Length: 49
Figure 1 (cartoon, rainbow, N blue to C red):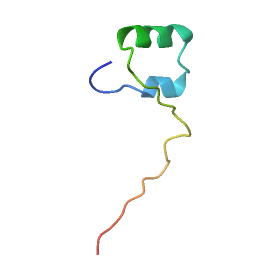
Figure 2 (figure 1 turned 60 degrees about the horizontal axis):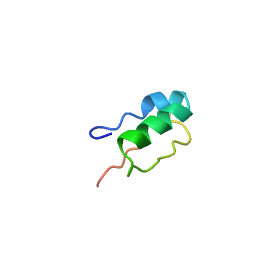
Figure 3 (figure 1 turned 90 degrees about the vertical axis):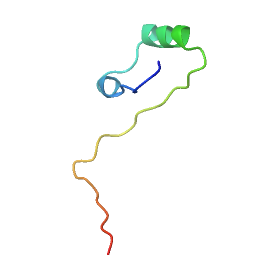
């Protein structure tokens, strides 16, 4: 999978065995990332003074 990663749908459902087989068939050298937790409800900002 080249280009922009699209991970949000996988935050809502786990990857299936078929998903994994297809990904590795198309790109045998890819790595796996694990999505944990949730998006923060508030944004943390840093101010420079």
